Image 1: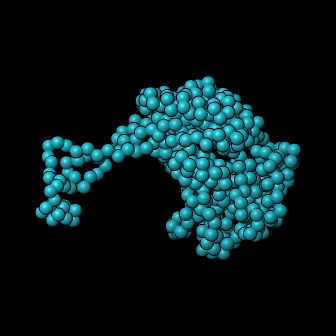
Image 2: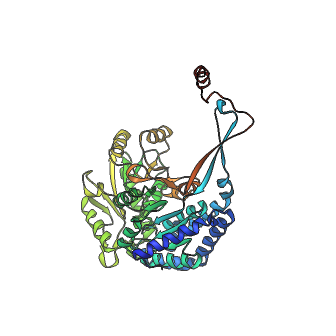
Image 3: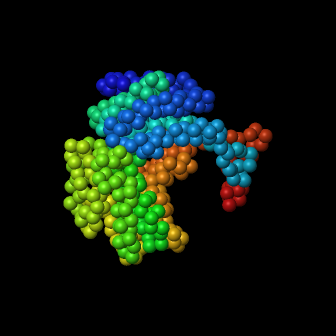
Length: 460
């Protein structure tokens, strides 16, 4: 672990700037070598990663594979495509510039800062790091102190496999983040809440540092009447209660066609029993709330509606049962804040216009879910709503598609990553225009007399 006093923060940044200036990180063989080293680090420490996430979140091993260790796929994807990403891209020029050629050259930004989140504390560090490495940057990482076991593990692994002048991990709490944000970086990549995202952006503005903010919000899930009921229920329950609901793109609340509400509720209850048994507290497949503060926040939400399933809590274990809430007021606290826990409010609608109006009255969400086989309805929801991303007839899995940029819009974030989007996020595309010497028309040179008519014809 790198210590985090102010002088050390400045020293680490300077050493990374010096190393970046050597040009080593720009070499494609260096980038691929480091991506392979990162993959090796994950493979060799797989059991330690599983244990750390079990200690922090009681995260089941399968969920750790799906949501954390599967980030290896992103490394493979970057290695496979990096040569193509690095090729300068031709840009078209208009006919009046017939003697010119134009290209876009991707170049690394320099020294970047990645601030991770606690809910997927391994993936949400490693995934953006892949983009930073692929793009040729040096990186400073600040893991979340709320997942201390994973934070320590990330520090130990990365400090073992990489030199700190290339990749450095600085652990600590708010004070460490404040010291880092006081310094200038070439990009800050932050994953967390909208409230903290505003703090990060304000700090970055002082240095004109570009930011990528992966935030959250209340991701709605519309359930139409034209569905496969069993598949819909299973996919909603899995996406919502994965990691005990502590997923930034978990369905936050359901908007259900009143014609199928009763049947859907029955199917949801059946799935919960099937997945976690009659007492989820004893299930090895159900996670826990990250800390006491979040437990208490979530427990209060249980008062905001009629509990139709679940509702049990155990403060000593930070356990909140997977819970379905009915008869929820739109003005209740549970409908005003991102839930980020295992509580699912169910709201019925008579007409899809109501559901769309409700979604559009709220800040733009990170994800929007729609369950419907009606193509016209799918088209209408896509056209009339705005969100970071949309997943139709499933939940959460859009996060795992490397070819789909992942990011928010409005209050749910700025910028995106995954696959080439990660490379683009940590790159600057330098525009290069080149002329030849075989011809030099004099229409633009002084004296200008008699040349305006020629210019008008050229530009007309």
